[in-house]
Image 1 (cartoon, helix red, strand yellow):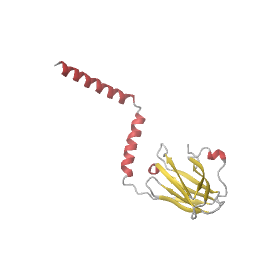
Image 2 (spheres, rainbow, N blue to C red):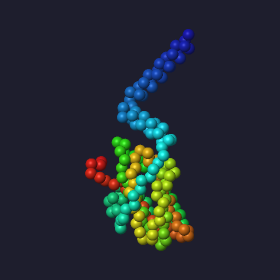
Image 3 (spheres, one colour):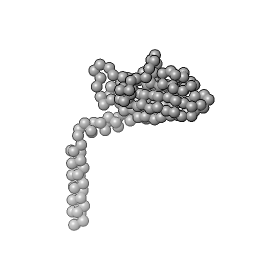
Image 4 (cartoon, rainbow, N blue to C red):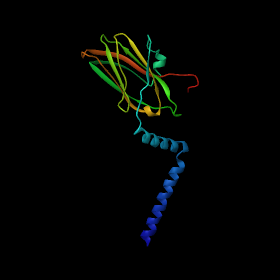
Length: 174
């Protein structure tokens, strides 16, 4: 009989601790978790349709803009290189415009490939030596995750590039 009372008391104590933990979690945190679960269920059947618009640009963004970039890196490598970065969508769930800048500082054409978390190629293009390639894309919740950008050239010679992913500010955007 004593063991049953002890077991019953432990169960009540555990149930109370669980209830207290739920009371201490802010309501917005609970909805964030639900949204993440819902998103992952939708992603399994999601088929991505990349929208990329190439822009005519002569210069890289100013240093002040590069400091606030989602991702910003310089690469010096032999033949090929790649980099991974993680994209987090806006908290309000709205899509946003991002621009990818790639500056080929090398002496040969630079092949660029940007692959999404779903392994779709959003960009496959070649950037001539000394040129800047800029593309504009719409990203949202369905683009969240780890992206890969790959650089290579056809002959294995040195690659020198700078690239940045920058959120495009529009009126009314936070």
